[in-house]
Amino acid sequence: MGSHTGGSEPAGPESREALMPQPAPGRKLTHGAQMPSLGLGTSPLRGQACVDQVRSAIEAGYRLIDTAENYGNEDAVGQAIRESGVDRSEIFLTTKLNRQWHSVSGVRAAYEASLERLGLDSIDLLLIHWPNPDQGRYVEAVQGLEELRQEGLLRAIGTSNFTPAHLRRVYEETGLSPDVNQIQLSPYATRDQSRAYHDEYGIATESWSPLGASGTELRNDPVVLTLAERYDMTPAQVVLRWHYQLGLVAIPRSSHPGRIRENLSIFSFELSADDVAQLSALDRGEAEVVDSDTFGH
Image 1 (cartoon, rainbow, N blue to C red):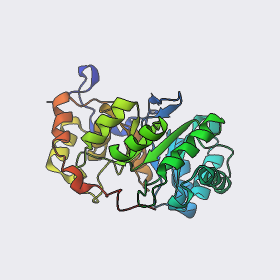
Image 2 (cartoon, rainbow, N blue to C red; image 1 turned 60 degrees about the vertical axis):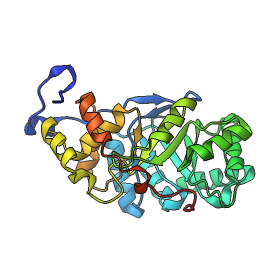
Image 3 (cartoon, helix red, strand yellow; image 1 turned 45 degrees about the vertical axis):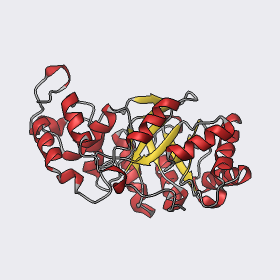
């Protein structure tokens, strides 16, 4: 049986609803930046709906916001940050660049274009969205990120959807490892090899589709439902707590204000080691994962 931190009893329904979201603890990155351990993914939100949801998330306590050139919503995310009333320095903003910018000069152009769309004066973490090995220029793109970081224009540099093979090539050719690699990761796709490589090289693992990539299947899994009942938490809270206890940064997506708040309310309980292991045992291997050697934009 799992138990809450300090051996307290699970919260009842009324007390659970009363739990206030807590700011996510920070994760120190290789180059010194503090990145919140839980954030908000913004795809596929666009327009005013995106503005409203991101602003609501910031008001609820989110301080990590994830967007991308390819999402087509950087303008809305920037507007939400400006309208939130929260000082820009308190928000850790991440965006990503597409394949056409895979060169040292291209990364700089992508950075400047994202800043213009965001309507802000800084980006904290810029990611290469996909490695696109068919064009073979992702090493140059990482070098472009590092150039911006050394100039003080980024607090951290990152990759997205890179495998250990991609990261190893970058390291062997440049001696560089990113602060963050954002990958598809959930109890159905635990990505053990990637996480082991990240741990060896001091790379923070950030999970996209942390609640599973196939709709509500993971949240309706019997193991997840049993644990949700045991801890008197929602299935999403149980899964997000699993990410947190494994040292991962999760960026769940939601357009529902209530669920956005619930997702941030995972720091009031703790899964037992056995329950973490139960969730990890749901792993289906790489079959659940988009192949980043063949897909990318």
